[in-house]
Image (cartoon, rainbow, N blue to C red; front, side):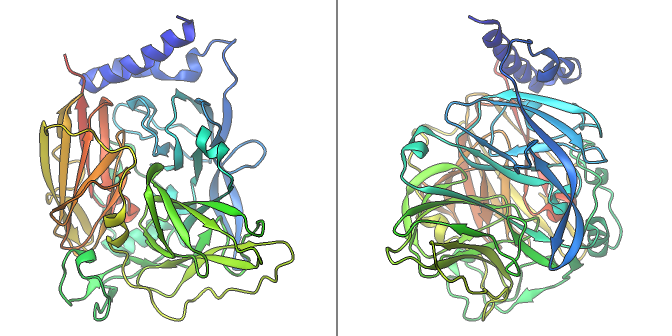
Length: 507
């Protein structure tokens, strides 16, 4: 046994013990960069920093998470550890969550009463076994995510390397020139008293924004799959909280889209990440047929189509084949309930690339559960009895603008407590007037039921719970710690829609 292996075991056991309450004494020893031997492999370097982005011809001050060569985010090879030194050069305190990873509790990238923020000018080390697939990283502090403090986190497998397909990663976002704190104040009437948007004292602060869309509703007549929206009636529903200035794909709009050169007759693996703060998208492949092969980084039985819904926090891996005759092929992401869209263009050599309008001909309907019902995990949970079952209610509303779980904002929440090794189910019943993408840290789960109908669905970390609907997730609690369970609409989380799954180490 090497010294490095011993240290890794210490990190895992210390994080497990932390879940039992000894966090304040253990955490100083959990800073990997502080104890890494000089002979250990050199860590990858990331920096959270400010940058100027031009959007529709106007400069905007935003954040970035970049490597020294300017690469946004991380792309890890098969078998490569997540061995990273993260420097905070943002000009303010920050913390980065590794969305999709299941690291030891202390390395999750969420600040709370026991895990400090990364102070401006300081660095933090991380060292854990990464989870393969298409994932991403983003701020979990205040409203920094709205100012593009986000980047891809791709962990390739041996099978990915063998696959005859060109990889194209697309990070979607909604963008505003305004200050997010001002926008949130417009929604709440300037009243925020839930720990300054902090998770145990660490989620608060932030800058940026967009125009509030109080009571922005859509007539549901003619919207098709009512079952996909939780069996709701023909009443109006709220789809979007705010109106943004632009919608971005890899930092660009269709005024100046990213054009990716691809081969005639070649295959492309689209790694799509919905990193938007408050926007669900319909992915439109146009003339191309697509095959979904992974959801939230986890392989699924292939599902074919040309249109796929993605809510905030979710990822889809879609394989497409280019025609032998070549051409230019937009990959579109249209905002639900609206005409606005963004995307990239796949173009073969010599193809004419025509301008794509940033507005579709008509508004898109809501993102529903039609895709979710078709997804089946390639590596499902093994059958076993449930040891701990919970039901939580998603509550709150637009006026007053407060979103809660069981009518309790975060800070007044009731944690879901389980023991390591237990099979756990959580049923989320949406009693609020909006849909919610619910994200669980520290564990990946299988979608076990939608609107009360059982299924052996995808393994994910983020699932849509439609208005008037429900979703049941199941997982084996294998990662001790205090794990946030929250809506991945940042504005909903900031006003209270978050609780914790506390996984305690068995004695």
